[in-house]
Every structure is written in C-alpha cells, then in structure tokens.
Length: 475
Image (cartoon, rainbow, N blue to C red; front, side, top):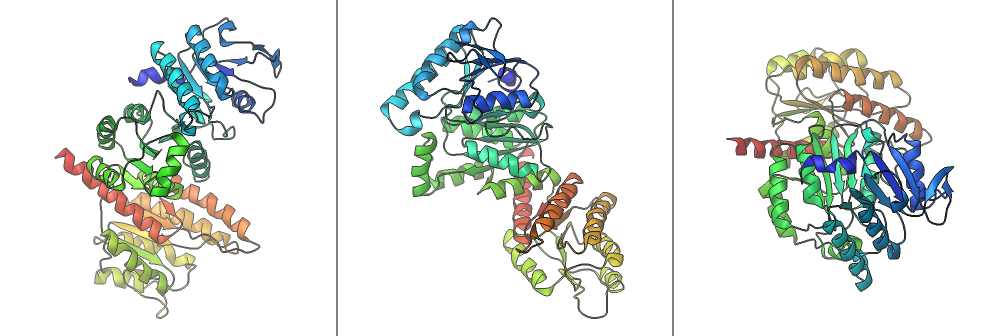
C-alpha cells in the first residue's frame, strides 16, 4: 500500500461519526466530543437516526444523507448494525473507515466471524480501507485525531510511531510516554485487522520521514512471509521495538480471544527477531525504555562504560549487570584516577571504575569536574550516572539536570542517567513530580533516563546489538 493512500486515515478532510451521541460515556459520543475538543479543522458530521442534533449540530440518519464527500467514517454502533453501516459508507464512497465496535471474530462465534467477513468483503469490493474492527483507532496529533480514550493526549507530534493490536496498550503507552516528553508521529490501534494489518502500518512507518523509531505490540500476523519482508526492510532503516504477545500457552489462548490472532511458537518468533533485526521487548515499560534509548542514542555502539554513583553496593551491582550484556567497565588510567582523587575526600570513596563517590547525594562543587574527568577518559565510550531525587535538596537535582547535559554537549560522549523511584512516604508525590520534570528535561537534551541500572544496561545492550546488525548488513 502506497503511503499516500493513508491520507484519508491519518489526515482526513472530513469525518462522519456513525453512532454519534450526546452521551459522552458512549463510544460515539466520546469520539465526537474528543474531536471537537481537539479543534479538528476538517468537516465533522454526526450520524444517528435517533437524534436530530448532537451538541447543537445537525445529525444525519445515515452517512448517505450527508451532502458533501466524506473522507473517513468512524463507526461506533453495536455489532449487529455494523454491516449495514459499512454498506452505507461504501454507497457514499467513503474512502476509509475505523470500526471501534467489538463483537466479531475475536468472540469465536459463527455470527461474529460472518459479520467480519461481510464487512471485509464490502470494503474490498468498493476500494474502501478499514481500520479494525475491535480497536481504539488512530492517534494523529498534527491532524487533531485521537484514539478512543485519549482526548487529553498531546497535540504536538514527535518522532515515535506506535502500532498495536491492543487498544489498551496503545492508550497506556502514549499516556505513560507523554509524561517523559516523548511525542508520537502516529499511533494506531488496529484490533482484528480484517483489512489493513500490521504489514501495511509497518510499511507506512518505514516510508514516513517523521517517524524515527517504531514501537509495536503484535499478537499475530495475517501474512507471515510478507511481515518478515516488511519488518526486515524497515528495521534496516529505523529500529522497530516489538512486544510479541501470546508466547506462552496461556498467553496464546488469551490472544485468540482478544483479536482472533494466531500467535505462533516462541521458536518461530525468536527466529523472526534474529532474521529481521527487530528488537524484542516485554511489557510497556521496556518498550518505552527502548524508545527513550533509541531516540537519545540512535547510533551508539560502544561497549566500554563507566558507572558513577554514591555507595559501594551500587557499583558492585554495576559490575554484575554489565558483564552478561557484553559491556565492560575498563579501569581508569592513572591520569584520570589522579584527577578524580584530587576532587574527593581522602576516604569514604573508591576512585576506580565503577566510581563510588561516597554519599548518594553528590557534592555540588565537585560533581562537574569529576564527571568531566570521567568523560575525558579515552578508555570510556559512555557514562552512566545514578543519583537520587530528594525533595529536601532541590538545588542538587536542578544542578545535576544542567551539569550532565552540558558535559554531554561539550564532549559529545553519551551520558545515561538512572533515577530510582522514591520509596513510599508523605513526600513521595512531591519527589515523583520533581523526578518526572527532570526526566523530561534530561531526555529533551538527549540524555536517556531509566528507573534502574539494570534497565539502563539492558537498553544499551539492545541498542548495540541492533546497530551492529544494521552495520553488518550494509557491508
């Protein structure tokens, strides 16, 4: 499918909401009001045979009654009425439809399968493209479109693309990522994929220059051979981070009842990841971690790391975490050791790599020259800094949020920050807000932030393996 064919889906000039309602708790009402609240600047039509108006605007009994052309229809009526709604859209020559309604092949019922086959046939016979059914739809921030539960999603777009069979995964990922400052070019919840499927969306992202990294949640694929081909082609151009759902027996049964997909065996999918270079992930947190990592460190391939922190146990943990990933912690040169020693007290620290500065809260007058000395070392490719966020020392947090990116900018060497989650206390909310604000500040300056050292190291390892994969195939 040519990317330009997605225009009525991602950038429709007019939208009809079939099943629009004055009740914002219903899918049709929620969708209609969300588009109005987001100032969609195309023509918006309400379709509901039982209403004369929706929010003061004329309601049409059918799509066919709308006097102007309709680029896209969003269908939010009960499953037994969807086939007729799609037939009406075809008669109106609507170019694309999203079907939010569930109750089709994912139910396993003969009736649901029949309805899904009928709407697929209507779409195919009339050249109409279809998203869904059983989905949350499209989030295209620059065009004021939003998935079903996301009227408050950011209006500004960004470099991350997202495709998912699960509406919940789409919604949760966008919402969690927006708290870190990550913005999306497009996000797609595509459900049962009885027309457009994962191959089509991945092909779109491969061609989309705005999208720099693609996150994906996939339960099963319609055309395995084509999917391998499209994924392999796309991953050579930009990273694809994929959580494959349903790799256990229990998970496979859950997949069948969720989107009626055939998941495939673990061995098959492990082969897929090796062959295509697609980066595997498990869970929303890892998908977001990898998005952060690839957006901040897209070309990183170094394996020599320094870890700077306060507390001996943390630096021991660093050694344990890096080695299985294939990363090394090389010793500092004598010149680097002397430069650092001159900045620290004579005891209570360990001037080596990992570097134990003593107290968990670094001393502000010395933190910048210490990190500069580490970054200047020819033996080091990247620096991981772990520091705490304390509600009692806001000046320290603010200083670190400026010092680390400034050194990164000056020396060009990657810095990675870990900010552990606060323990529960009466100050947790204040600390978490401070932590969120500075995470976003770091990421905006090109410094990735992770909750733990182990998560940071895992991301580094996967970035390196991906870049080595792509590099080997360019030779």
